Image (cartoon, rainbow, N blue to C red; front, top):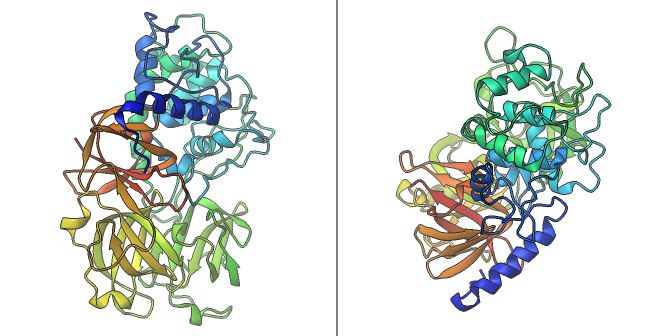
Length: 509
């Protein structure tokens, strides 16, 4: 980790700010520590500065905010999703996995917004045009801005009723979301209007964002990304619906039910978005059953749900395996794989619990409930771990990051960054800035943090975990959780030459 000494701190902030400005210049967003002079004393100053403090909205590299400029559809999606405190791993990707693509055909030049748009679409905040495109560079209309913001705050079409856009405008007025924005509303939204509107319902947006995170522990999302047609020609007033697999009778169907296809060998892509070249639905259900040697086209699948283990796709990066799968609307919605296949290599994350489970050969093994690469993953331990000293709750509830060595999806060793458990760290993983304990952030400028007398940097694709003092459990958090007075532990776990934090753990205050 590069530490910036006191004497060079100002210069370092300037250099890093300029670098950030270069990276984000396509969006027109960069923000400095001081209040931009062109909003000082304006009625919306508080809204802008409050959102800037949470890294939701930003200004320009020259220090101004330019409140009267227009925003594009891509930019407002980014602002709203940041307000939802979306995990960075899901919208920006990680050091090893790209963020999910939105699925729209007209995103050339908008790579920076792909993950944010996909996140917004999956959660019903925004939709594409009836023609199937998104038009990310179009100026966002005031009607669209109100609709997206209200949806992010938890108000949906079926509950509001009425005709669009009057229904959303009326509802926004009812809950004081339009406070500070005087009638008549313009056709296109100014940047300050977006800041004021989002700020007015920020607590609702944050609450809905956290609710969305808590409902996705197994990797499921509420709806798939892509275009959504609309009846009145607006690109934003209709959204997709969500659903869970069932037999229609209120009970869970057997994993073996449905129209399953068999493939003897196929591969997941590096970003775990496709299998055998087919897109995996965001709410796909994953089961493991028996072992690889038993898989063949004529094998008999049990009709007992208890014979299957449920999981998610996130531990199958680049994995080749036989499988049974089902597709819905052209996407894989269910997949059954052997219990003895999975990622081989190293994974880094935090532990939420360790318990006994059974592998595909009826051996009792340790099961590690983890957060890794911003996802909840249950790793099974191998039989090799039977006589190995593994972490206890007194260790893993203190903000410690662990290195898991994996073979075919099974943990064969666990090592902590502090070198305990007699297993050496294989890679160059190291803790930075916090010296084995949580340390308070005294200053923050973009991705640059001051801890004590030293300054450190977070990577753009940093993964943030939040540790609850009450439960001792971790959850995936957004960048807004990292702010002045937060107590953090930071880790550099990647092999790149950029010595900055890949993982930040925030302790509940």
